[in-house]
Length: 479
Image (cartoon, rainbow, N blue to C red; front, side, top):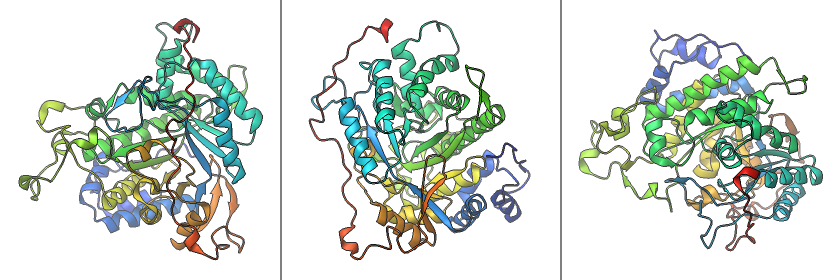
């Protein structure tokens, strides 16, 4: 990943074709104001054209990728009370669970059996689990499955680890140092990289409304910077299509870009570890955005924007759009309906937002298509709106599916979607190195004789009861 920051041209109109050509070539950087203007004014086909051109500059015209991994949600017990979540449970709920280590190993064995290379391991923020529960699990995974990449524990989990485990010797220490105190033992035990879960929207007014008990943007970004300082790659995410304004989305992208600049500048030449050895530095490898899924969530019970006659005319302005700023700071009380109305995002809005993210995030390598929430064919179209990666062959997912989304595809279907979009499918690893290029007759999709046997299936989700709950109570001083 190059460390040179492209210059910006704030004097040019966002729809200036010369500006957009230069952005697609990686020669000029959009300002946040231009990004916002593009989202508001650019025709959808124009956004797609330039986002696709930017993608082709980075990834070429031929290959688009996917990964075979498994999303393992090891516990649904969580101290946060996010209004968009249908997954979290309190510890004493009848369907609360924490999986035993052996149950987790069985899931990984099933993944390896179909050629999987990575687990995405995230959970609720469960105060009953000591640090040793995580380190023992990671060592057990690496002993049994040394070739499996562990992509685990989102920034909100790390912030709660700091709170739960109370790292010794760090009272009053900067948050960055406290995070390193709990992140290093997890890395040494087998954690390979950190996923971008819990990003939601960084804007403070929105985050305070929807993410009760979850860390703020500064803490989220600091976790990722700590991971980068240890040489780990990470991803960034954004969940949109709820109470936020368009400016909030662009502010979110701009913060990812700003902190990516910082990591590339500070760690791009390598970092010295605690033993004096120079290791490669880390950075954000990918950005994935998806629309809010409302079913079974408190946030989803809010009234839809546009349901009243006065909200349907050309002059109607969504509450957050009336007050949101590109700084992410504004008075939530400035509009009486802010946070009380939901503006969901359909396929067109999803493609528009993804295309803007590809043009804004000039220093992030990969943009992932969100077929899990949008459906296989919108995910396929997204490959022409800036996405270069179709994500995972989804064996299991429990968080988004709790809110009503249950798309599930196998490898042949995923390969066919990529090929029918005009590209050659390729299986990748976490660093986007190609493992298998499917350019011959033995490709998974080209071996299928009867496509009726490859219809989308319901995602695996944990049954009720899920597993014998782990009952662990450790005094705070020993965590």
